[in-house]
Length: 372
Image: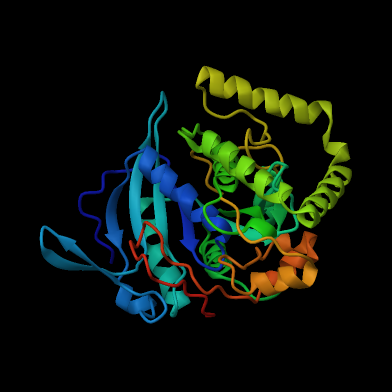
């Protein structure tokens, strides 16, 4: 039995999780959870035993000095709780970690144990993939669930992906089978600028989360960071005519595909977001386009209490594939892959230099892309 000493009774808790590595292109997902933890001053109440789930030759511990005393920080997954202030406060249980190297079923069962003990009403798992999307357009964010009823209620896509998966997919299925409503949100990161950080994708995920669970997330400096990121990529692309031409091709394809979205309904959703942020009020009934980020999947926030700067640029497609083999976060969501064949191709590729995130403080660790 899990003992949670020092954790108060939570109000309508939602668990929000992200894992560095295979499902975290551009560090977008893990940075989103880190932002929530920082803005709302999360308090860590538990950490999983690193010895049980991590290969330390893949995710290496780090040594550091504390007033002359050498200490070791081990890569692991930590849980913290934050209280979202407002007229009707609620709590978030934040899960930040690295994709485990082994024992994925035990890993998920341990997280489920915490969810049950804390009375979690819903689990939202954040992820990011590499895709053929231009950096000049809003970041596409796809909301997916394995529960047909939840898909209809929240206007989400029902997962139809088949192929290799990461810990995001495994945890989503484990939560669904345990009877906990679970959604995964996926941001598409431009494959030609995949190096972290990607504040534009991080902001898109936070905006989509904001709409899904009906709360207002303070964005801090993220909007300005997103604008600076896009400006930097614009400048890099302008220096190479082939890259500029390729980006223009992606823009034309994106604009053609989204022409029906240029409707009064889309404009109304955007205006609703503006009013909400101006007035400081929590969510509305419609899921709106992110101010700096993602195009969203549809209406219907999850109401409480209702359980049930730029990187390498490929010269051509073959060069793109070669570069992706060494990129971080070379995964596709097991859900959004249906829309994009290139994203599907990314699904079996591991990543060679991740795991250096704030939740583990492992500056030289590489991420674990092991399969269960």
